Amino acid sequence: MISRNFFGKKDNPELNKRLPPGQYIEKSFPVLTAGPTPPVDLNTWKFEIRIGENIDHSWSWEEFMSLPKIKIHTDIHCVTKWSKFDTNWEGVSLDTIFEKVKDLNKYHYLMAYCYGGYTTNLPLEDTQNGQAMIATTFEGENLSPEHGGPARLVVPKLYFWKSAKWIQGIQLMEKNKAGYWEQYGYHNYGDPWKEQRYWND
Ligand SMILES: Nc1nc2c(c(=O)[nH]1)N[C@H]1C(S)=C(S)[C@@H](COP(=O)(O)O)O[C@H]1N2
Ligand SMILES: [Mo]
Image (cartoon, rainbow, N blue to C red; front, side, top):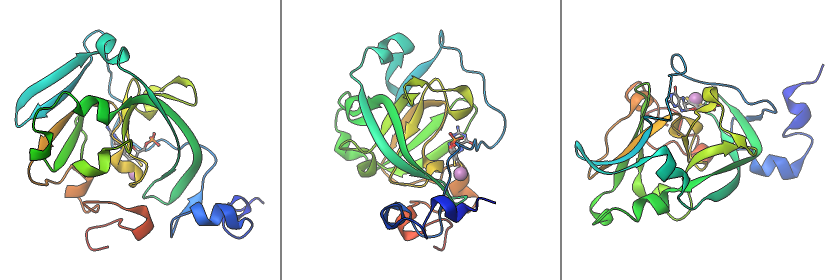
C-alpha cells in the first residue's frame, strides 16, 4: 500500500519544508464545491468591480482576455488537509484589475462573489503585488468547469476556499464582512502556516 507519507513529510525534507502543519501531499486535484457546478455562459459573462452596490467597472470575456496575463507557479493548501505542490496558473493579476479603481486605498477588504452565489472575504493587501490572480488556465489548459472555469480567483498564500471559483466580481469594502464559509465557522483570514482553519484558531 502506498500511504500518504510515501510522497510526503517523512521521506523528503525539502518537501516537508513546503508542507504547512496538519497537511498531506495530494497528487490528484480534488474538486471541492458547496453544491453543483453552476452554468456560466461566455456570451454574457462579466467580471465586475463593485463599490457598495454600484458596478464601478466591468469587462466582457473578450475585454478580459485582452488584458495582460501573468503566470503563477505555486503550492496550494486546502483546509480539508490536502496540499498540492507545483501547480501552474495563467490569468490576470488583480494588480491589473485594481489599476481601474480610483481611491483604491479607501478600501481595506474585498468580497469575491461568484456565479452560483458563493462568496469569500479577503484583506485587500493580501491580493496586491502579485499575490492574487483571476486564473483562466490551469497547467496550460482552459480551466475546467469543475475547477472554476472559465475564471477563478487564485490566492495561494491562504487556504484554498479563498480562491473563489466561477468568479463574477470583487466588491471593495471599507470594513471586513464574512463570506460563505466564514459565516459557517471558517477562519476570517485562513493562513495555512498558522493553521487558521476555524474561527478560534
Ligand atoms: N464558487 C465557489 N468557489 C469555491 C468553492 C465553492 O464551493 N464555490 N469551494 C472552495 C473550496 S472550499 C475549495 S477547497 C476550493 C476547491 O477548488 P477545487 O475544486 O478546484 O479543488 O474552491 C473554493 N472555491
Ligand atoms: Mo475547501
